[in-house]
Amino acid sequence: MVLKEVKRGSVMKRREWSERRNISPKRQVTIPQVFYEGLGFEKEVEFVRRGNELILRPVRDDMDFSKEILKDLVAQGLSGQELINEFEAVKSKIRPAVEMMLEDAKTVAKKRKGTGDTKTQELFGDND
Image (cartoon, rainbow, N blue to C red; front, side, top):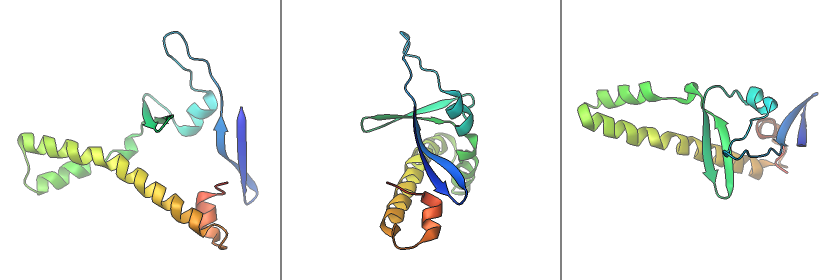
């Protein structure tokens, strides 16, 4: 197990933590309890390939903007198959947009690192 910790105020918070696990003959892996509970896994897991990495993250209903998307599309006068097609197109763009915003925020944080901007350091921590 590898653990890197970063000190924020008087509380130590885990920034990066990795564990090795065996893969069963059926290609199954057990999620360590510390990750399962700490990240809020429940019934579903999302697999994301990013370059040569595989990212597992819990599926959260709070990131679902379906109701808001549908309200907007209905207000635009869409219905039937046109509504379904546009809904699927808009919904597929949400996660990539949020991830791009997070990457942009990390870039800004890196640029501000060392400038004495403590608010940015509190939000994003030490990126070394």
